[in-house]
Image (tube, rainbow, N blue to C red; front, top):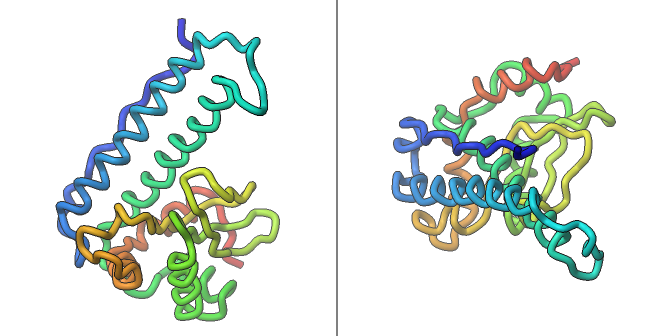
Length: 203
């Protein structure tokens, strides 16, 4: 009897096929990549279920390889589920609780946007706006892969994918233009819903 459960990828919402500046072809290809992460998560867990753990070794072992790659697959799932969930909106400046947090912790919406864009240009794979529960504030964090530089006890609220697969079909190497399009399609109602459900304080 397996101790894990296979998961299914979330469906591609129709709103994501009508984004401003990010094409249907790009989103469909991107979603297929996400589906691949889900499939690999299930495959790796199935292999771990029957693996002989007596050969575990920190230099090289099948257990180490599978566990490292599991973190990459799960990171890919979680990052993309945030990414796809908060796209499909009207963009513009944040509203409601997220606006309050951004203005409190960055000084202005413009300062937050400039810092997240710069973080996305500096990153090799991801940039996140996350709420740090220890410091009680938002911060923009950088990631080079699905599983690099996680910040413990921080909750991502905005996930900006800057891998080339996210933008090359539409923008070639112009990552900055893609990030502008990302901002133009954010759904602040979704982000504010997360702030409420997580109980993130705005004062």
